[in-house]
Length: 210
Length: 200
Image (cartoon, rainbow over all chains, first blue to last red; front, side):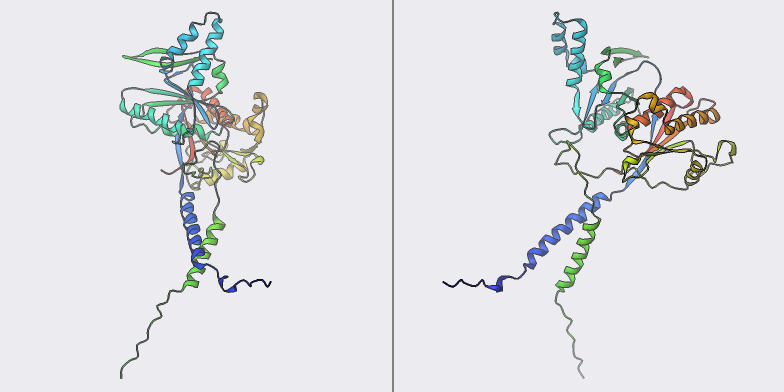
């Protein structure tokens, strides 16, 4: 049986389809080039030199690695009061063991991913913006945020945090940067809330004794 | 005599148009540099490229105070380490002239008076004493001591040191500078970081 010859007239290139693809590619590159070429600027960020005195802060931000951070404010122990009471009831444990458990609880419950897992955006930025909004709503209050960063992280992570904190209208968030790791906090003597009277204001502070 | 009307060709020149489109496409294909997504970054979020550390510095900007510049020796080869330059607002301590020097001259003088050194990449993992013995760290240490001794004899709010560093520089060297400046207490009340940010 003779095979049927394939009709050679249908071998034309589909110009319209090709044009469609080419146009889509062109639009993609045009748009992506626009985003890539958004201008960057060099800004000046002022950071006070830390004082060599026992430090306490209203907020402690410990950068753990490029993906997570620890955020402790004075309300941490209030939020975890039930769990902390449960640990205190464990009388079969030594005081040191209970303290270690409390620290672990505080660290575990307050460690967040920088980029939230549900894809809703930058969690660190959102936390900082909440603090900025709070500071803007209470211009009479003064806040102090301590930013701790491990040696190996790019310093730009700290600068980005400072940049957000410096957006306050009334400049009532002060900040300081020091080197340190999450292990320093894990091995600290205690993490506690302390009420400090500053003039007529009673201020809640987070105190970590290293 | 009636003029003959010349009809202009109204056909759409498709091959010419395709030529232009292809040229544009090739141009964008060649100039495009994709940005790899970061670990843990949301796939829904537009992955904007990071701001590069190499800003276009105004070469004629007059320096107001000491500037410690930390930049990669070669951006393409991070293993080559970091170039540390100590830029002063004058030529040299014994050659102070009226008026501050421009950034480009300060860079030149830093080279002439050997206020430059390379910080090896392993500085992050070194022990404290080894880190302190690195020539680049010694350079920063000595230059800060001398500058404070000569220029910041009285505590003033305006006393400050500028740091200009690439965004990829590890916090260790920056923390060393912060701690060093902190040791002078009120003589250096603040530091100024010149860092790249995306314009919002």
